[in-house]
Amino acid sequence: MSERKMLVKEVMRQEVITVKEATTLRELMGIFQKYTFHTLPVVKENNKLVGVVALEDVLKIFEPSPPHIMELLRRIPLGDELEEINLFETDISPEMGVLCVVKDLMRTNMVTIDEEATTIEARSLMRLHRLKRLPVVDKKGCLKGIFSLFDIIMAVFREKRILQLNQNEKGVSR
Amino acid sequence: MNSILAVGIFVVVGLFGGFVARKIKFPTISGYIVIGICLSLLNVIPRELINGELNVITDVSLGIIGYLVGGSLDLKRLKKFGRNIISIAPFEAVGAWIVVTLLIAFLGSFIVKFGIPNPNFYQTYLPLAIVIGAISCATAPAATVAIIHEYKASGPLTTTLLAVIALDDALCIIAYAIGSGVAEALITSLKNISLYKMLIFPTINIVGSILLGIAFGFGLIYISRFAKTRQKLLAMVLGMILLCVGTAKALGIFSILANMAMGFVIANKMRHHENMFKVINDIEDVVFAMFFTLAGAHFDLGVIKAAGMLGLLIVIGRCSGKLIGVRIGASISHAPSVVKKYLGFGLLPKAGVTVGLAILAKQHPAFSSIGNIMVSGILTSVMINELIAPPLMKYAVFKAGETFKGK
Picture 1 (cartoon, rainbow over the protein chains, first blue to last red):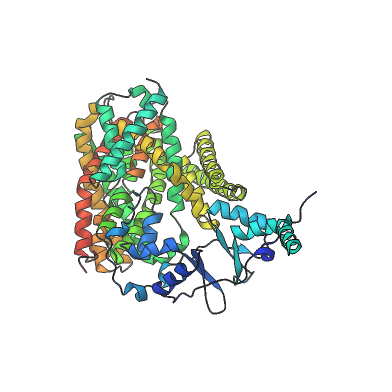
Picture 2 (tube, each protein chain N blue to C red; picture 1 turned 30 degrees about the vertical axis):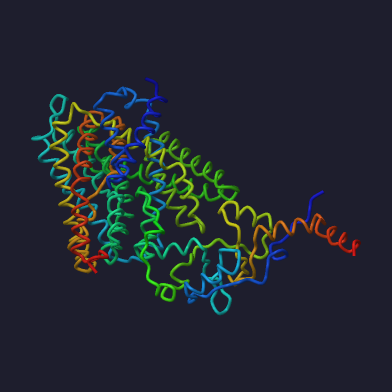
């Protein structure tokens, strides 16, 4: 018997913590410190998704060259791999906390999933790109929610009625 | 010695050479090539193996290199850097091609001694000059990238330089396709040569290679949607590169150009194409260690005397051609004066595609009489360039005031 295909929009989380392009590095670090997830969608006023910023992207502020030079360096074939930045030997000024904003750090070529896609499609996309969270967008590219591995597990548990049984047991014991 | 043992030696010893090169601030590729030359001088790997069974390494590696070069040609990004790049890149590439060709064609008979009876201008020196000239278009990014990174360089010179380098290898592959076709026509059909004959076969070959690459590119885009993990994606990408190389060889067309076209289609027709190139990173080290060490092993001690002078001539011709080409291209596009004055100095390093194409030319049956001297000459010029290019590049970025300290 074939099981019903769950859609992303049925299991995604709709309450999403987002940041704006103008959010400062200090504010961003505050959000990362407060929440457990380390990838945040970047949206404009109309909730249009313009990028994502991850904790690893913060490392970009230690890079010696401007972002467009770094992008060119990474894309040129047969170049030596760029040496990893030594975090312990960097000289960054305290002003960077307010001077550096999310727009300088975010990735604009992010992987997203349509809200009408199935959870199976979303899972393969996550495995292929080695991602744990995917921003969910509508046809216009506006952010609708976030889809994560946790949401899949919860949905499967609900589907298999494991969570429901658990709740029933609680009801009986009460 | 069997071929598997030879490959093992190339990988292990080559990687060690690459590691030492990085330690002394030289590009990894140079380390591989030097180790290869040492293996050749010590006669560790039999010559019949280097020129025979191990050719398959060259074919596969050049397929991968072609695919990566095509992938770096992102049209949207190139448009962003504007007319400076579109004008400078062809001029500096063609400049190097023309000057090297003229120098070798006319001075070749004085400095290169061939082991064949009656070498003449049209069948020996001119084809040699055309092929070496075409291969001289390429620019290696490793040394340039290292210097930009080390001195935190940024500004119009740095940006233009990186964009031109990204375009340069692609231009070189196209130049090689044209040049080798013309040279082959010169060598094989001197008696009834016509301009039509000389151009029609290379044109068919080039168009055929591009069409094959486009077809494989769209094929790869289609099948890649079935890849659920990166490992499977790697298998698909590598599989398609091998299929493309094999088909091109079977059809007698340019496999490196076909693979470049495939990479170009992926980079410009697929939305999330980054993974399609990143997966190659996982195997890049082992493939390039094998390939460039093998390339170094092609160095022939027997022809070193003649190749030394030829190498020097290539360096002089290439440097002057690049500098003149940059001046002309930059003047036409009204580029900033720092670009006009100093860009040429940043385009002097060469290694990867240059060495690859030299080995490819050596394997070409029509070039059997000029292949050895050509590879040794090019390898010598690569070594000279490795020594002189980094200080000149450093001079350019400092003079342009684009280093962090300069500001």
